Length: 454
Image (cartoon, rainbow, N blue to C red):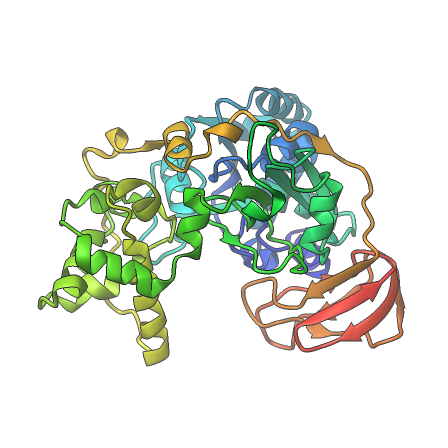
């Protein structure tokens, strides 16, 4: 039974839908005692996980049970925010229908950022602390995003991943949460939501807005609306170009460093609010700012601790009163370490203790939303739209996941149907299969993508 599910998940091309994109068949091959469904939905404004839980709770719970059976887990925990009333009710009904209902429980979390971070979630759900640069598997936990679990349930029925549920929010005519075929151009998805629409009272035009792919904390600004939806695309947010989110995301690394050198006053707020530091990891952002800004001799492990950073952006977007970014330093350091071939044999601490003040330093999402200048859209509802949207063209990337890019299994001119395998995992490599998201003719095959015309 366990191997059957692993094979089905592998064949279906299921990857982590929360953003990381790790091939799921590898994770469900592990042995753990606890499976955690991650419905905490970290980023403000995103609602795709919430809507999926409201409408498809039964499939998500089925995915949890299947993952428990595959991994040998004795319990499953459904973690979501306590403000998701409709989703909570749907989960309770779905759990009651399961034969393993006694092994399933709900964890209702306060809306704090980053509640959906794996390390944070494991601690909140089990009290266990994931080691530095470790994985939840090391402490007996498998964490899967709720959309991943939904895809696991579908994979068990032989249904591959062809669509992505994502939120379209901000300054759009019809805010919505809808299913987009993988490979759809971002511009097409925005059109389905009625396009960019500034508020009536605003003096801005559509050109004064940018499109953020993903959430306001973990996303990035789209350079071209011809870019494609991936299996990991959580949302599209249309925000003013002068909004703090857009300003932060488009600021260059060199600019962040210049600001840091000229302005950092070593207040250590970045460290005091760092989620990893609060879990006991030896990551102190203010120390790397001190070492680089002032050229001071610091222990090397203060700098290489960059590998502990989860890049949640809390330091730059919320903690720092001067709009500085320790994370930008860490991203640069990690890049240099990779280029040098540095091997981490330092940051492996296992014996951890959460900071005594941790519970008093957790950041409420509503305060983060205000700091980001997003209060205007905080109460915006993006209802689930399950219409069958069909673009005339898709360009499906072959590297949407962690690991090696998929290897094309089709050629130009070939006719394909929705769900047909078009690219597969290379031999003896970590990767994920890719399937056609629309029916049509393969118009182009490159090293990076497969284009299909309806």
